[in-house]
Picture 1 (cartoon, rainbow, N blue to C red):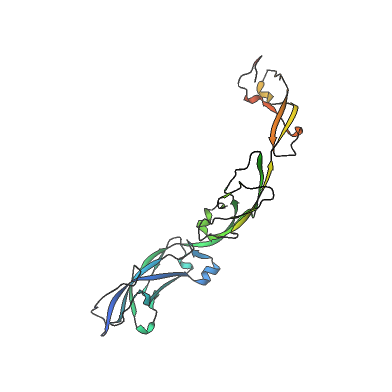
Picture 2: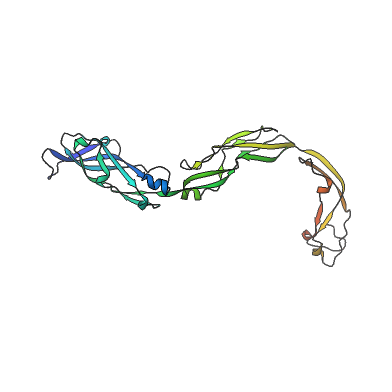
Length: 274
């Protein structure tokens, strides 16, 4: 309980003019030894220290009128404590009075054990995943979408990063996109303790209008004729006209190949029409 509520009792062995009191709701400050954090990249599993509070049994002068704000409880963790669920003991020596002139001696800490999640800091590169809606006018087509950067470097706790396969953008729309259109889109960090090398990406769509094209008298190709075994396949007509709508101006008759896949014909015989 935070707030520094105080209750006291007389201890039989207390020195004259002193009493033993309990101070409740004293916050615990966890920190990692700076040299270990730098050299071995040890960090808290969720990026920030856990929040905890303890009660302190303290011997102090009877008129001290102590509260939680008068004490500091600080535990420095080292490489020896590195564990995904480290059991950390808080001892009386980890607590002291802010004003040492008040002659308050910490006798006991309760609770004395805490579970702290420690992890190793690491980095990795993942692709950017776009979350967009596309509602283009009729006969317009999106044929390319350039993203810069298309991948980002992320850093944070090793176990957290192992589950991240991509960094997604926040939702955005391309409904008003035209040629020459460019949009800056924010990235969504999966956790506040995961750091990104970029906070946004530049999205440039390539949008073209579809045009009607007709290709006349194109030959039909037969595929998988071996499936017909002893049958002879005669195709009539063996040419077709093709009418399409396309956004690709380079499309020509030579790049179109109408075909009939004979492996898809379950029954064949004289006079069979596929």
